[in-house]
Length: 336
Image (cartoon, rainbow, N blue to C red; front, side, top):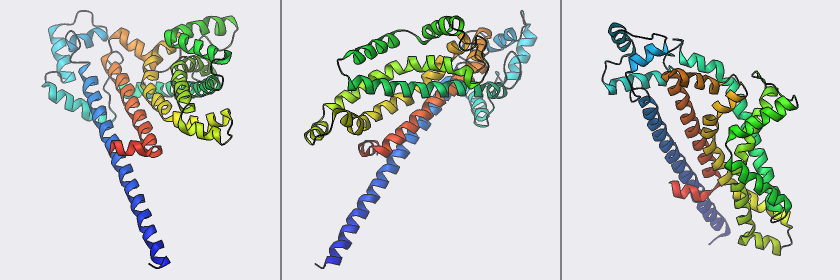
């Protein structure tokens, strides 16, 4: 066989491998997207069911939320007609779902203003708070896990493990109350009545990040230690690589995918845990808005918040899955 024929054959083999890799990547990506769409649709069904399945008559609850203490039968009948509650349940769901697809989340029971408008007014403050909290969470957990794995069974490792155990055991609002009492009030750092600026967001975001980083640190530390005991780490040691180089160059990339997955899963938890923190720090975001809606049984607002949290979780998980599939070929084969 001529040399140029050998080279041409090798190019064909390489080309086939590239096409197969792209095909498995696309198949895995489409599989994850399809799963995410099914999950998102199931979430919308559950969120919609919050209203018709809640105890009591919906029209009566609406009138009570609007301040009508003793609604008459005529008022209840008029409200049922206004809200379309006389239609069959499947028609109510189709109407609600089509409105959601157009960005219409209904009207607030109390203010009668569009829920979408009220949410958009408060959404930037919550995004600022949770965005900073996510940065603090990821940065702190990465730093603590690296220090802990690099100093295994020494005092820095024991100190960080104590923090992770305490952080995992205590709820976020305990950290928030301690920070408000000692940092904001005691040392006059931050604001008791917060406004939606990044300076005011630093302390509550750090508290959320410190709480979330406790569990993330445990996960990443375990992955790093497992990778440090692997065969490729021993090969690197045999070649003269230092422990710190093995930790950064070899262990961290292999332990990073589960860490990314934990971040994606925790996005919904961050949004779900925001109301208490926002209430403690009087943060003008969606969390405080939700607490007001809960006390007034303002179901359209509650539905909208739960829907946002669910879709945020689905979207974040999908993005993390796609990144993982792009990085790890084994996941492509499993998904496809």
